[in-house]
Image: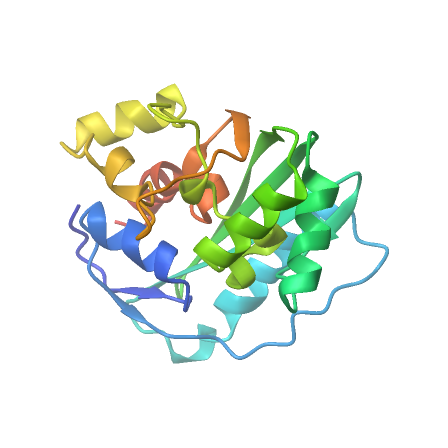
Length: 224
């Protein structure tokens, strides 16, 4: 997908960079240096939009004709945000909390140019199967999820032969000739052994990965 305007992806996330690149966007990566604090009174589902806009605005004064793409993802369980775990023990604690339950992943995106700002959020409900401590430790030691909110990546732990995408995502990928991207995003462990943690998803798979790319593409059209 080609745009006349240059894109700045305000993210160090390899998964966001991968999704943007694979659907055909050309962009420059700039990592915003921000304080990611927020008011304790803020509703948890509003936090990612607040932080995404904060990230985008770092570059506002430098813009000429570029469009900034900034994003933030939170994992919410029982109205509590689970951030990236600090260490293996905290990852074990988080996955134990998520085991056998349904939680919500909210990803917000802020698109910012010199002329305007467009922000939107998307949410997906993710249900985990019941996990043993052996499942949890194997997953952590194999996939090293300490860089991921909630201590997991959806692409690492889906049921075998399961298509995680919503119909909107499937239609988008078919429309750009990239239906193969679904399979390509699913991680194959170097050990040759996989593990199923997720039972099912309700909503966008790419939102759980950290960037609802079909919505990004749709909203970027308004900046042409």
